[in-house]
View (cartoon, rainbow, N blue to C red):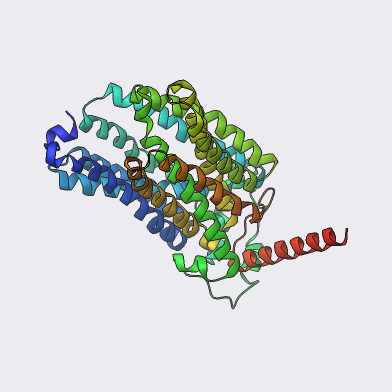
Length: 422
């Protein structure tokens, strides 16, 4: 039984179906900024545990919703939990993984997301009743909180919060997991020395305002927000317009999901060996060019149109995967999850704005594709002027970010002066 049949969401009440999906996306948008700030204040592991419990409880409750209003509320809360889980899971992972293995771990996580996209249509086909489908997707999250107890809290966050003893305990615990039997490669004195480097420094508050208080942080936040917004803006526009190809919705979903995996692998290889900013920027620019090229393809060449669209969507997905890695490496530990949450909120905002641009199709059929093609190109170019994080250590404080920005500016000035002399 479909949701619209159960609560009579047809005819003049048909708009309420889109409202149900919009409330979920609104929850994702709110969850990005709320759970990001909470993670910088209370810890990544704590927030991840809370998000898992939130998804399990709210998702299960949605399956038993007595009416449409409760259904929308539970979906809103589920969306908040999903977004908080994704951004904090990635942040905690990046803070524990050595720099040489970050791209590999990132591609594993991205591939798992793509595999989930492939599995979902099959589950929807096998479980047609929406209540049972909702329950089937929610119940596994009741098990995942048990697994998170095995994962230690980020030692970087603990050190920033002056909890050196617990940070040392977690480091030694991980050392023992990795085969270091005595687990004494880090001492309390080493962590205490790190904390005493700037004893009078006032800590930045874990709020979005902290992302705009200094020049380098403003530059990072604005450029990355543009990147996240444009990738989601065009990505969801393509996803919403897949019905125009005339194929089965389940089949198209599988095709899109399958095509994303090799492109994500390719972009991650570029990120690992060429650079993060090039992987993000080039993925955005290529996707925009392909979307614009699709305008020149005759309408009767459906297969060619579909192929170009699939590749464009794959590049957009690849840019988001690399942007997760790049964003986590650019922001400092004390504001990392706040920055991840804010940029992720801008990504969700792009998904909200995309349907509004699609409305213009009724007045100018080609206008939406032109906008969706130009946006990633324009937003991908500023990424090339951001610092490269390939083979770089994660920074912990805003002061370190500002110092990196000044060094990068000085280096570029020297290059320009050298070029002028030549």
